[in-house]
Length: 540
Ligand code: VG1
Ligand code: CO
Figure 1 (tube, rainbow, N blue to C red):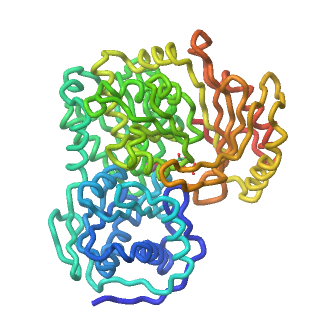
Figure 2: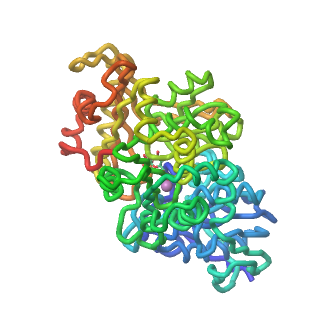
Figure 3: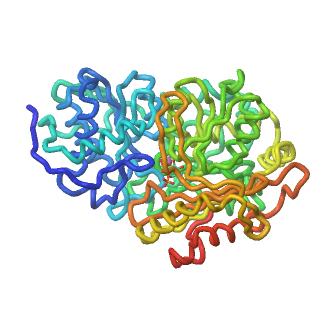
């Protein structure tokens, strides 16, 4: 029996940088999740009959409830099969892998990623397509359009299934298969990396899973398969509220790990991951590596891992990510791509075989093995490189800078800013760009200023208004963007970068090296004037 339920549209279901993210309370409104899921199914109406759909999430509050709803709705939408992670758990990269391995039409990933969880915090739904990656803009735009017109949602009239029992059950005419969320993903990692070499290197490490989804994956791969000591994985059990912590692996929220790694008893390697397991934080003993540098260093050394022994086809980075990776691409004589923020823009490049490794300054790195960024993948590639070279993170970083120069980098986030004030700031700045070229601010000379637009080289689709870039003489720059993943007010992101060439000051303190660019950013955009803030809330 199929239930057809009359509904009215919600006006605020526009997917952001990575799916629809709202407060849990918003998702708890009648029909809210159902409207969005039905809108997804309506957009794929012609392909969905008889197809497979992957469903899973990061275990946060509301995860199980929405999975049960999605299963009943998938049965009504005539999917033949749903593959769901046991306990409703699937990390984002594991979901991407499952979609690809099962030849699924797509997947629903239930997560608000690095945002906090719990009844007062955030929830999210993202649709991924058959390549395993986030739906491209054409599809998210179509989903949004549909949410504004929807009048009915459909669900099989069936009870909840047991999400904890592995195996198959029938829901209406559809098969639901509850699978081990870790097995396929761990097997994939074994094909990419030299587990024997990592084991033989006898490295020590600390991994903070932040009470989020990566715990079971890290425990299986690091402790069971690679033989790292018990308790290498901290906070390894996914909790609906992440134990009250903010599962964003940066120096603020993963402070304990940072302190461990800077201490006298630091292990060789420290890492953390975010709510849904697609981000990574890398800290060596006494050495933090910025995500932009990590991308460049991984790309430069990837050939040392079996999965990349044949070399890279190209490297892609999001626009606000530092240009460190571009220097590696130039050295390897392969193309470098600069895309808008958000992993959905890498999908076409990966599918077309133009890029092998991609990354973002926000602690996302990944490759063509799936179509999402992948936190544990980055951790394993670092371990593989350390094992093969016998070098520490600090040595790898210093050698890298000695060869390519160093892109000092930081992101300043101003959170919970009044939305109108943030919009005015961006508009004022945007309207002045033409006059900026040649202007001097302190010792910095502006060479170029624009509002970043991207033309996808594979399908020629154009994305405009992707952030304001102001480039200075000598390879330094500042970028301004408004976040597309927040759930209250606006977050202004200011990305600061200064290039220091080979032979220059390569081991200085980042804040000091960026001070004049930070001052220039305020002078150019009037951050204090518009937001009333004199300091960023978070510096990463
Ligand atoms: C942020 C990051 C972006 C990342 C996105 C999703 O977006 O800046 O690089 O792709 O989060 O990551 P925004 O629009 O807030 O700047 V995740 O791990 O939250 O899925
Ligand atoms: Co994430």
